[in-house]
Amino acid sequence: MSEIRRVLQKVREGKLKRLITELLWMYAYVRKYWLLIGVYILLGASGSVLSLGTSVVSRDLVDAVTGVNSAEIIQVAVVYVGVGVSQIFINAVKTSLSLRVRLKVTNEIRSDIYQQILQTNWESLAKYRSGDLLYRVNGDASVVANTILTFLPNVVTTLISFGGAFVIVVRHDPVMAAIALMGAPVSFLTSRYSMRKMRDFQKDNQEVASNRTVFDQETFQNLQFIKAFGLVDRVMEKFHSIQKETVAVALTQNHFQQWTTIITSLVGQAVGYACYGFAAYRLWKGDISYGTMTMFVSMAGSLRGSFSGIISLMPTVIRAGISAERIMEVTSLPRDSMEQKEEADETKRRSREEGITLKMEHVDFAYEGNQWIYQNVEFSANPGEIVALIGPSGQGKTTTLNLLLGLYHPQKGRILLGNPGWPSIESSSATRCLFSYIPQNNTLFTGTIADNLRMVKPGADDKEIRQALETACAWEFVEKLEDGMNTQVRERGSRFSEGQKQRLSIARALLADAPVMILDEATSALDVATERRVLRNIIKKEPNRTILVAAHRPSVFSMCSRVYKIENRAMIQVDEEGIREFLDTF
Image 1 (spheres, helix red, strand yellow):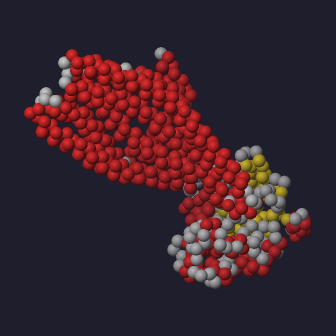
Image 2 (cartoon, helix red, strand yellow; image 1 turned 180 degrees about the horizontal axis):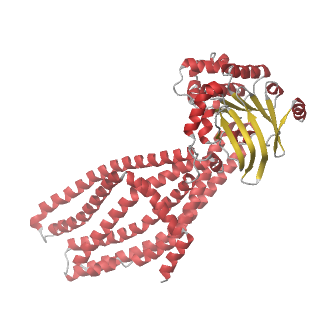
Image 3 (cartoon, rainbow, N blue to C red; image 1 turned 90 degrees about the vertical axis):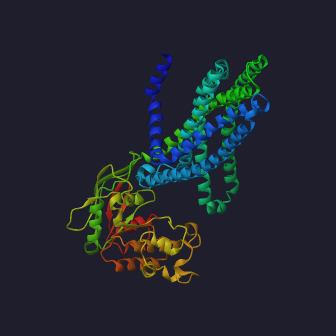
């Protein structure tokens, strides 16, 4: 009854439900590769059978050598060699198949998780650190894949080894079987206690590993900053601190495992001595032969080892369950909605002739429900207009642009996009095809300049790329590079100045040929003359394009149709005097 109460308590606590959910999630991947995994199980099972056969054949071989059955010595020797050679080939095939299944399952899980993360709602995903997500995609996915591959085969092969050895020993001597299993209750009780501790240890290990990945990634991403401020020593202190934490967790776990191993090993050794002593006693009395004694000792060891093997599989399941839980935590986040994709595509098709109108109607927005950016704001931008957003840093300019892009969603009100004279649709992930976006920070990727531009239009030829570079006033420096547009950008565009990186980003946005362009401080590193030239080129290239600019510089405002100021939880349209008042505060 007490055991039943504990199970019911686990159900109430949600632990059993969580475990079942984790196992079902992993089963979804097992099902895709059931044939390969089934063959792998069969190979493992055949290996276990051959191993049992080896013990039996060893008995016959010892008996033949000692004269009990010398007439069959050649036949037994041939069988013994044949079994050994078969094990070699089976292990070779098993190893090759193991690698194939592991690679397939690991890649499948990583690909699936990667895609789901990319399709996850940005607002929900923003609370996770990129290094932590990276570890979940790689480290946790590998743990799950290895468990999928090894757990079921190991269970089957271990059960075959245990069952086969038990049947053989019981048929020859039930007392020997009972002696061999005397340590089972101790192993079972020890494992029940250790499983609870192992789950805590695995959580600590996963957390430390994730933090280490985050630290390494942030260190190398910000290496220039670290060097510029002379922070190498401090970073190394943090590095050593993380190392110490990793070592402390590992040693604590190892200390616990050592004690449990000592207890189970002592019990196992005592049982082994008992088995050996009982077999020797039977041999001394003349009840069994030397070969049978050898088989008894081998089978008794197999029984103990198989039972311990079954128990030792539980930490593997626990570790995989924790990794699966961490992966499911991310993959269960809300997805981007693409319900309006057809309407958005049709709106984009019409926009070449008619352009796009943007509206914010009575919009309220707050981070995490209570950090208010603004309330009840109104905003509009029409085809052919440049509309600017101004305001102190941190007041909501970039947030407004993210709302328009559908990366965030208002608590109240609507954000509408549409062709003039046609029904509008609400901003969502489906409407992002209407935008080209140049963020504050450069977003250049490793590869050539042409590769970076083709990210938004894979089929673009060199002529289109050059036209985009010319419009962004970037061709004037690109053509002087050793390989022109095929010059390597390097990580984060490290070989270019900030102004050059901004112009390359603008060229990429132009190549996307979207009806709405967003520039979030995207011309801040350009001189005034180049900035005005770039904006004029953009307007000239596509007169119907709607342009939104978040900026602080007066050179931009003189080209704008309207300017909105965001401050004190409000967004208001300001005139020239309001702009001057704002600029006077800087």
